[in-house]
Length: 266
Image (tube, rainbow, N blue to C red; front, side, top):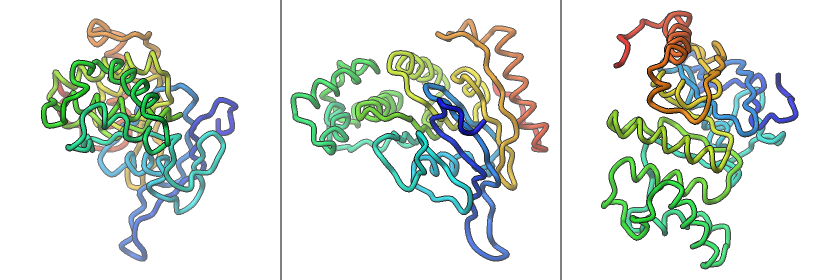
């Protein structure tokens, strides 16, 4: 599948080893995967399967031990403005307002003040934070902080959004609302998204495809298509079609990978 014309992210025989000698840990081994332009892909798997390692390789925050990772056909050699990264921790500047946080990357790009303001206000509105544009992060809830982080990532116009457990620290209700907000933003400002999660329901609800990883060493286990229509809603979460795909992903993660299966989350 590698080399398809609309491939945005390509892993080709990627191997990543941490450490040397007997204590060396193989985080990824012979990973081959294509993620396509405009696609929303979620990545799930047991702890230690290399999900975050793969994302950090795309981000340019980690190198490969063997193989190669490409974005738009170019080998990734380091971070770049074509890739926006959102982590579980919000990483906002506490002394800057929402608008100033969103403008920060634009300022680094050398954009004029009036243009920065226009772009920032567009994305602030897109994530529903217009009334809080002048608020400091300490005045925001966890979900609002993450919305600000998403707006900041979108504002610099990246080709790819890389999201590593971005909703992991949120309560269950806020997490569900943030999933809907993210999909609404993605539908309006389409980017290629690689989204890491431990939550099978979240993985299925968001994605076009779910990438299931297996651990020790980290490798591709299975790719599961999510043939569910967008926009998605709470009714879809309760549908037999959703349950069927969810169970398929769950089985791939916790049965085929040989992991001990935990109790299903409500």
